[in-house]
Structure formats: C-alpha cells, structure tokens
Image (tube, rainbow, N blue to C red; front, side, top):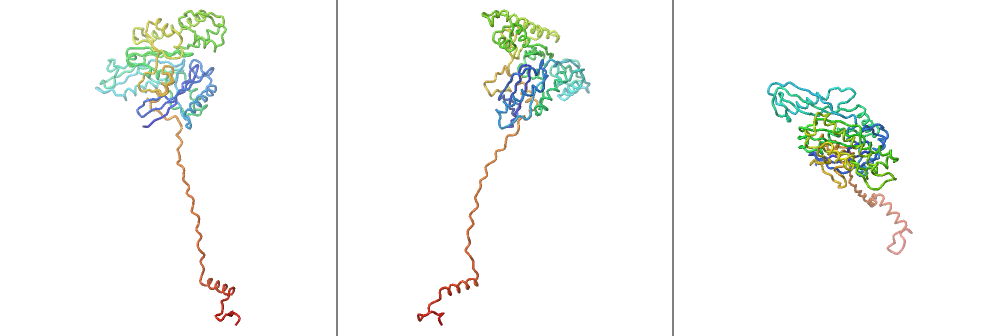
Length: 430
C-alpha cells in the first residue's frame, strides 16, 4: 500500500505544535506523533509577528520530530491560517445555463473560482465556502444532479491580511529552508473533524477558545454560514490576575489550578490573597468573553433557537473550570467539548489526547483529503555487502629447456664427473 508521511505545523499565540502522520492510498490518516513547545512574543492575536524568533522555536520542534524519524529528515510541511484578521465575507454569484442543463461538480467549481477572483480591500481571499444554492429560484442543499437554466450560489469569501500569509512563507521557505506543501484555514479544517453531519445540518456553533483569540464558526443546513475572530482570549484572564501582584507565569499556573469562571469561592489563600478575590477577576473576564461569543449569533442574523445542535467548543481556554457551564447558562444552549470524531483518523500513540490535539490533527486531515504530498526525505537505500573472493595463488610452471640447452648441461656434467673406463682407467687420460 502506497503510504505517505506528512508533517503539520500549528503556530498558536501560546505554543507551537508539530504532528507526524501517515496517509494511505484511501486517504485514511494515522497520527503517529505530536510534539509541542511554548511560544511567547512571536505571535500576536494569532498572527505571526516576529518571524526570526518563531523560526528558532520551530527548528527545535522539528529536531524533536526528526529524532523520532531518524534517519529521515523533514523536507516539506503543511501549516494553517488563523488569527484575528481571518473572517468570512458573504458574496453571491450566478450563471445562466442552456435550458434543462444538469448541474455538475464542474459548474459548482466554476462558480467558486469566479468568487475566488474577487478583490477585497486590504484583504486577501484565501478560500471560498458555499452557503446556499438556488436552482431556477428554488433553494437546494444538494444542487448537483438537478436540472435547470439558472443557478445562484451564496458563499463566504474567507479572507485575511496579506501579511499573515507572507510571514508564514518567510518562516517556512526562507528561514527554515523547507517546502510549503500547503496551507489550510484552521477553523474550517477543525469543523471537518469535530462536527457531526447532523450538527452541521441542524445548526451549531463551533468555538475555538485560544490564548489571544476566540474564533466562532456557525453552520446551518450543512454549510458554513458565518466565521469571525474575536481579539480576546484566555490570556486576558491571566493578565487581569497580574494585578494581584503575580508574575504572568504564576498567574497562569494558578488560573489553571484554582480558577473558576463562575467565581465560586474557594477556601484558603495563596500568597495572602483570598481565592474569592482571585476568582472575581476570573469570572468577570470570562463573562465578557462569553458575552462576545453570544453576540456573534445575532451578528450572523440568527437566534440560539435556530442552532438547536448547540455549541461545540475546543481550545485550551475551554479547560477553565465552569467556563462551559457558564457559556451554556448564558446562551441557553447545550455545550459539549469538541474532540476528533472522524472515522478516517486513527491515533497510533495512546498518549495523544484527541480533544487536546484537534488543531494540529485537523491540518493533517485536510492535507490528506487534498491529496497529500510526501514531507520526508527518501529512506536511505540499504546496500547488500559485496563478497570479496580472493584471487588464487599463481602456480609455478616447470622450467622448460630447449634441446640445445639440455645438451650443454649434459656436457657440463660429464666434464665435472667424467665417465669411468671399462678397463678401470679414466677415459680422459688417453
């Protein structure tokens, strides 16, 4: 079976993650390893700001990955696009067709390409996602296969600031010397592996609660309807806590250990600061973040009742105690933690958490569905040892003498040892 190895890199505001996966000929992904490292002062609100500092951290991360794959090396990489400038802008396009023309995948792709060519001031269009279709004026969730003379598509242009993609290119190709195999919109990719088809159809909201951003994606009738990134996250809570005379590292650790989004009082104190006061800071900022999340539903032109599948939440911020409960109470919607549910993804290492690894695994999955390219150097060819056979020793041939040489040698012997006379004398005396 033809198997390819792919490498995914996820650059977040607080950490970077790298994942190794293999993809078989059927597009099934096996996650083999995940490595991560903290990242500070290189990313602001999800956007890479200091390329050189980030490059040093990524090199160290890739070295950890290569140590698992020795002697093969990383040559290419897949990454994602996310950050505060990523958003969806609604557009429409339509096409006249000859009477009774069948709507095909090629027609749908042509509409998407037309929309992809649109210009948006100060933004770069990175993808197009359909919202809804109308064939001969009638709405259709599945237009392919229908017949008509007119088709109209309402879609979302996924846009970002040009600098976001430019800095990723500088990081991967110039600073790291790797080939950029592909770049996916992270929140679209995450929706593919954590949402069920029923949730998409009924209507749901996917929330990615990160360190410096919260991204909200809303699905309905099987399609993405809305996507927006809010420039606040769990680090805002941490920085609020530094007002209680903690350095940021200690405030972050305490928030994880004892923070409570509902402000529940806790017995005892830490450094003479009562935990009730501590959690007042936590709960007030958590409530503000939740208010902004809730407001996105009205910005999308919807109500909570129109999203009966509720909220699916991912990201490190969602691990704050009671945050999801407060989110459900405030929005009057059911909330569940998102995890990898796609049956086309397997995890080879039991130490990998499906819920914690959604972001980087979604990149692997998106790469596999788009036709993955090999990211590792070829395996070294194993040469068979060559058997050296010693040459045989030369055999000395007997000395060959001519007839003349034999005669001379006979005469020499006769002179040295003269023959005896039959009468007892020496023949040479005569």
